[in-house]
Image 1: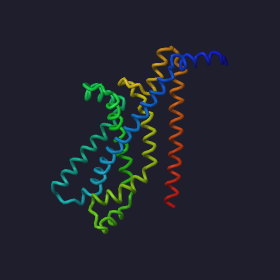
Image 2: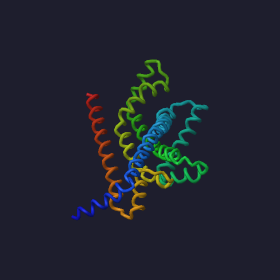
Image 3: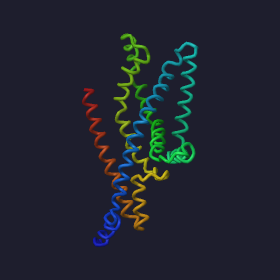
Image 4: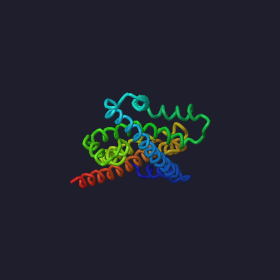
Length: 240
């Protein structure tokens, strides 16, 4: 192994002209997009999950009226949203948001957060919905016995239990979203992957920049996977 060649390549790709800054600034943008998008995704997913699970649990028992019609319409809208978002690639959704829906905007960061957040919301919705459906039906009866209506029962009893049940799955969704943001460069965002591509284009040396990008993603994923495993153990211990 020619260590002098490796040292020269390392110096060319990262030390010379402080090219390592492309990776650090790109990593900062990647983490910013991921955190904001996952928050947006949880908000969207929670609303969609509540609508879908409420329709599944109560539609058959509801009396005919405007409330039942509104719930049915909202459920159809949510099902359409889930079908479209989960049935199309995230990179296509990102480019549609940037080049069509927000064509007049040059705030690519905001567009990316919206695109990834809306995409994540579809998957989060099914995760939270499965958590809501897994809560024992007797919990609704317990809420009624306390004088809660359906909304208060969902807010104070069902949702907290459902979120606790699906918290590890939501954390895994964060990891998936982190890796999906690697396509943010399609809308001119200097994320981690784009930072590696900029170095590669300047040095004509593909190995070092791409290896550094892959290694950075791997270290971050390993770190968050470790955090998730600790979270799962803590949740398991709290249930005992």
